[in-house]
Image 1: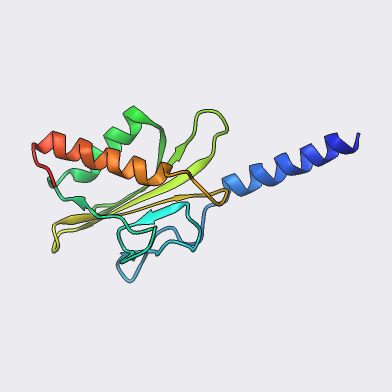
Image 2 (image 1 turned 60 degrees about the vertical axis):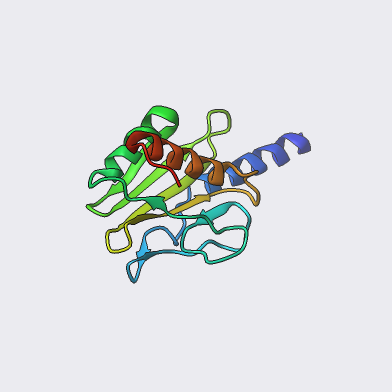
Length: 148
């Protein structure tokens, strides 16, 4: 009986934490929020450290539509917010339904799309967020015939 209660409590904590949207979602002063100190987030706004990742190329005026289409066809993705220069998508894993928040912010002046991909739950992501962004990068480069 005690084990069942412990399992239910742990499952409840997991379910609640996995549903909570981080307060760091969205833009601050026209930039994406920095990553927390945990190793389950990558951001092109980070200058150094394990969270740093290069921004995506601004391959076309409809780059956010391309990214949205890619995510919808390759992952369990739900668009949470879409504006002219900003996209927030939640991707859920197949088995445990872990949720990751992906954000994309077009910077026309620099010719890039800033990115932030962060897990909602847990401490490590085993490179999943970085890998997903790199897959999007490869897709965009293939789509336009360009490379790094």
